[in-house]
Image (cartoon, rainbow, N blue to C red; front, side):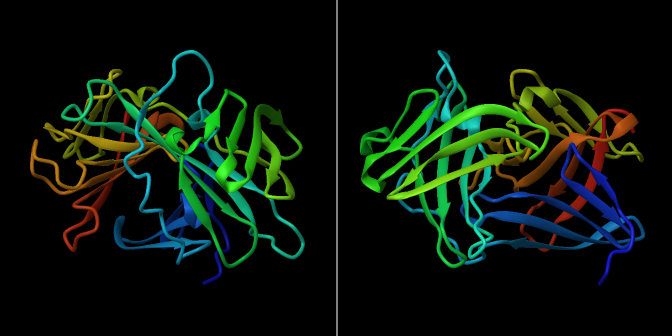
Length: 281
């Protein structure tokens, strides 16, 4: 289907057109991603996810590498983004730094973070690792060093109007020099604090400054939040606090409506429902 006209919301990476809408962004080891939602009579009737590398796998080792976020300088999660290192032969080559925040009172009284580092130098393969100090990875606020993988990358904040990049990356992967920029910017969940409701007044989402989240009066007891995509998912699988299906929030802003969230309840099940809530419905 050829899309002849559309609206694009820069804050939410969101395309709206007749018959549906697209939420675009990054997906760690899978590269770039699109959530394609079909619409009928104002309701979402179908969803599918499209990615650059559909067969890329998240590493099984290192999934437990959650760390308290440092308070004495920039952390690797602050440089989260999709850095294109495209060449003429491999236009989809990239380096991804994908940070996640974990809020789980049963596990830790403070918010934890982890970072997935993914590298694709060609159009077929992707290699990924979780940041892990036990395997001699280091980050000093500017330089990521991974001696076992022979990777060294330098990151710096650099607003470049010509490329649209907010961060610049350069370094080496084995013997190959790489450099690229990322237009993505990590945003803390506290930015979206407040209450949001739908136009019919049937749903209410509340986010507090200290990270508490509730939907229609039911607390989401624990969750993961991706700061570059403004996406929150919870409760986590296996949660014993309040048994409930996963809710997915895609957060952002919508003009005069203020803070906005596209909400999918019972995510990943046949009972899934999607609706939108606003600070000013």
